[in-house]
Amino acid sequence: MNEELPAKELLARVGRHDLAALSELYDRLAPRVFGLITHILAFRDEAEEILQEVFLRLWRESKSLDHESISVAAWLIVTSREAALERLRTQHSSRLRPDTPREGGTDGNPRSAKPLVAAPFSSRAASKPPDPRTRAGRLGPVGPAIAKATVRIPPAWLPRPGEIELIGERLDLLHKTIEQLSKSQRQALELAVFGGLSEEEIAAELGEPLGKVRTGLRAAVTFVKHRRRAILGTWAADI
Amino acid sequence: MGCRHLEEVYELFLLGALSEQGSLDLRDHLARGCPRCLVRIREATESVYLLSLFSKPARPNRRVKAELLRRLHKK
Image 1 (cartoon, helix red, strand yellow):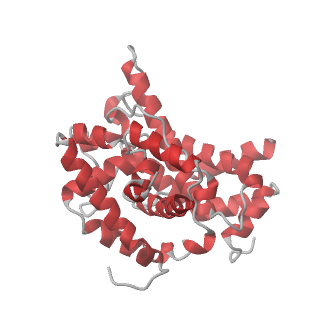
Image 2 (tube, chains in turn brown, yellow):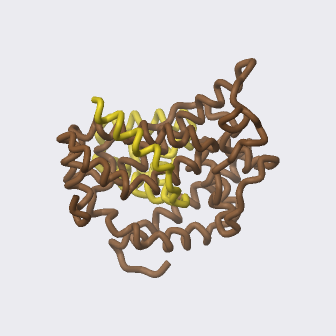
């Protein structure tokens, strides 16, 4: 397999059920996708299951994805987030039922549970594993309620390959942007992005008034939005 | 219906952070094919993509890929 082959060409080949092309895409993109999934789900085996599901879905749906107008990296990231949050929601629903299984690691032992919800917005600099005794540490396996369905982003709304091709080299600008937010804004954003929570749920989780959370979250999102072009490298500016 | 007031909620809608009523209103508006909002919602998807990248890459076990390819090979 030619290493220089653009991802969009690989996507086109996957659409023709070329297993080698899928293998190549997996090698390039799975670490980023798996990083996101393990940021949402606490259990590694579940995260691996979702990773497989997402690539299987790519295999099934690639024929209908226009490789010229859809970035396969964006498709994988957005689809993974939706799938992992859906799993989180299922976990929450099952916890509401009596005799809920699965409180621990793969062997069912709570002590062997190995949370992977590491380095959220609010503690990335410290890069410490989450403390399961804290709310933030519990977010993955035993996070707060996510009652609503995940918003499914249609492929037509996804970025085009050329629009995000530089992002890999510019992630430091994204981190710099996030670090400029206040701690409470980062926490709220973290709960929205990696917890799938609504503004109301975030306010309840943080024990803050809804108005404060709403204002902070919207300001944070607007801040990121205004720096998007610079981060993506399509607009030259300092951050 | 004007849509300037939606300016600050596209990303929240995509993230699933908007209230149920807010989401319904935006869906309803988008369903009418507002060209301005369709451009904005695509831009908002870029932001959601960016925010989702704020997670450290993690290498899955090699067994996962082997199993995936095995499953696909059978299909």
